[in-house]
Image (cartoon, rainbow, N blue to C red; front, side, top):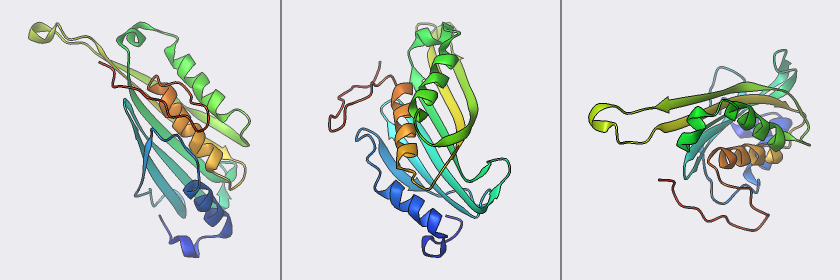
Length: 182
């Protein structure tokens, strides 16, 4: 964090508490990692890992606000996932992936969502020609939460990771069993 939590303003302390008590998917391993230090006076970063997806959730806080955020908080999130080879030929996939973010954020008090969806297809040739295409997708997104309760925002990010990895949503209290895709 850019500053110690004990010296952080009450709104950021509240945000940290809501992140600490967030009831996220049990199949995603979350780890706090060093946060960017020059973007905002207060920040926290959390990495996530799932079978075929990884990601990063960064919460920035500037008590004075930042015009580009139109608020005092900003979430910056990253999701990377290996997906089925068929997605490499699907021109509509990026639109579908963006709709997953819209669905995950639906009903959450936020504004200013934006981002990119990138798809990379790796095709092997020559002695490696027998290998199937490998398709990776990456979503870089951000939005401005309207308030300090970050639990629903990190839950939305973990759901986005799961959607990207092809893992369906799970009802509360139910663990989804899945294996690695071949």
